[in-house]
Image (cartoon, rainbow, N blue to C red):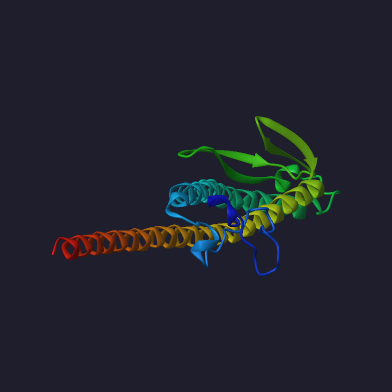
Amino acid sequence: MASKGKQVGVGPDGKDTNPRGIPYAPFVDKVEDYVSSRADVEPTLRSFQEMVAKYQFMEQNLQRRVAGLRDKMPDIQKTLETVRFLKLRAGGDDDDDDEEEDEIETTFELNDTLYAKARVPRTKEVYLWLGANVMLSYPVGEAEELLEGKLKAARTSLGNCEEDLDFLREQITTMEVAVARVYNWDVVQKRKEKEEEEEKVGTKEKTEGTAGG
């Protein structure tokens, strides 16, 4: 039966998945471990091709996630640098009564092509977008810690995604090799069956010819 072979592989560490739970592909060393007759070939190939499709689906999702992280990380980094700058200014002389001198003039982005000028006073509080149209106020120190955590998490996630993409490519290659081996085994078996059939026909004709003589 097609199900007699293992449908999940085992990695060098003896586990059947990588650290994020993606299963190893089975390595087909002996086709006979997966098919015992030509009747098993079609369901086995279908099973392997379904696994390839699943790996490719995960690969596409990870590629989109990687693209999103690479877009998001520069924004987090830029926001963190701004917060650190505001924190540095907030640590200045609080007894300075010259508010005009404490202000800085800057530009901020309204959209991709539109910027506006603003005067920013020295402050110990910032507002951060958290997504889903939610903005919260944070003390500058807490905002810095929050952004540092988000940046660290994004870098870790990006590293994991890139590692998983490499892993998935290896599993897809392994499964494509498995499909090719099962297909080639079927071709060889078909050729053997044809040769055996031709040999039987030849033997039968030779026997009939001898009997007729």
